[in-house]
Length: 403
Image (cartoon, rainbow, N blue to C red; front, side, top):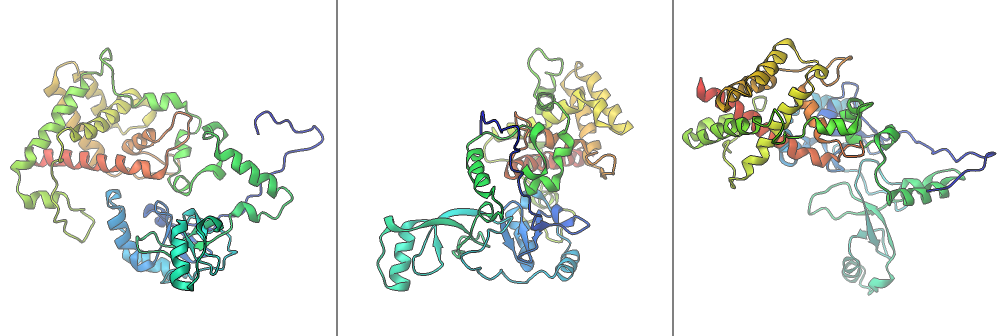
């Protein structure tokens, strides 16, 4: 579309925006579990996996597939939602071949069986299917391709079915134009944040509402606030202090009983006892990756303190850290410990006027901003959460050992 000018007497066709098939309950509790409801399927959909999750698999799916998120599902609330929203207890039936693609479900390109509605990833699988199921031989190079979806992402799930892209079902004279435009846009870079609206935002970021946090802010400034300090930066000494701080907790792990480490690694709101103890990494250099997240979080607090709306006690601890950075590693290490515990040993309830009061959540948002102001994909935040949880447990562990 680059360089195209529309005649003065005409206007470019307006995109047709259909209402989303995905929704959350009024309490928005499903989004906190990483789920939404597809109203056409009457089923739960996992936002990250882009797959249907049947009600009796919700708890195990979140625990096994998204363990790093540390999400605890309220079983009573889940059962109530299933009843109120009339969620089906099994996977949906395979739809007819002319079904418009289901929103929230992963779509892939595959190859169609010429004798039945089955779809497969590879042509050789279609050939084998036709030979064993239909007792006929087909040529791989003559197979028809098409879009397909499946409800489950389990390795043994092979029930791919053919779907029609939503763009092809637009009931408008501009449908052809929109389909061609979509192909052109797919080859272009992401839109800058100044040109984004809610139609461009993924279901994941519709639930996080992180776009509201970065709206109106300078992208370069957002990213610079969490940049680790350079050698000529007055904050440079914080790197050595954080390294000493985290290493001290790390070195205490082998000196602690396995039972204590198991308790430490057990979610306090979970009914299950975690038999996997909190432990050291297999590679020594791995700890450095975890260290940088604490450094970046502290840089955000020190650089942007006035804009973060910190509580008075946290603001005082930030100021104390700023003052002792030049005094030495030990003094700064103690100040870092007090500040982190103050951040992580309390709740930060959001309000209508402040959706993101937790400085750690604000830091996570900063890590997810791309150079053009867009937000990274949902899967890219998983590692951030995992490392921050490890850092949090390390701080608590050090506090318990020193008390």
